[in-house]
Length: 234
Image 1 (cartoon, one colour):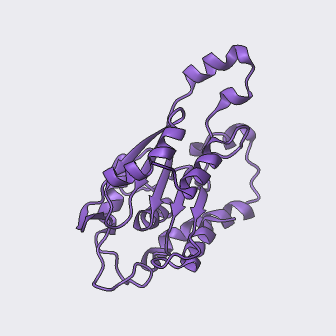
Image 2 (cartoon, one colour):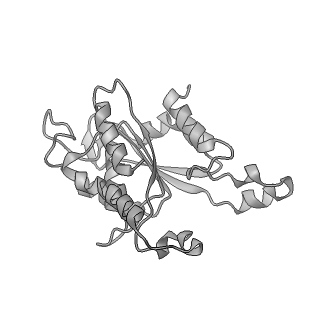
């Protein structure tokens, strides 16, 4: 099977040599030849959690994403998760009233149950979502993840493909924007040694994100995807 242009584009960003993109974990590309084996052995694979769209399944999404999974297999391991609710022919992350769209809904029935699945899967290094899965990923990045009532964890990177703005959970997504403003306006000088350890700071680092938005997306209009992207910051 051939990779779609979207998959190849994402793979290029993740795998590009000499990139400073946070998705890239390939130190051997800039190391002297003698040290390559040592670095390769020491590098820990990072974990990406992948969330299918409405009507999809973990298995079908994994098959679709196979080219990207294979392209990043040296540095990332992928975990594909099934939504907890039935939505023919597969699963979904929340339920809507007939004819209702997520960006119009006043309630996402079951969203909290889906978020609890991510709480249990935490910690991980990145999250990728498509369509409804992308919206869940955006909510999770803003809300925070982790066990108990304190949701302090956020994955360092997110890939958001084909999302709409989940209006009734918009306050969660917009927490990312509030964090960005708070960090930008802070006059506190953070020592370099502390900045390298996000857990030592009293605010979470921003989630670095890649947004894939279809110009002709009939399900989730492009302006909806742009609204999600704006919440993550420039």
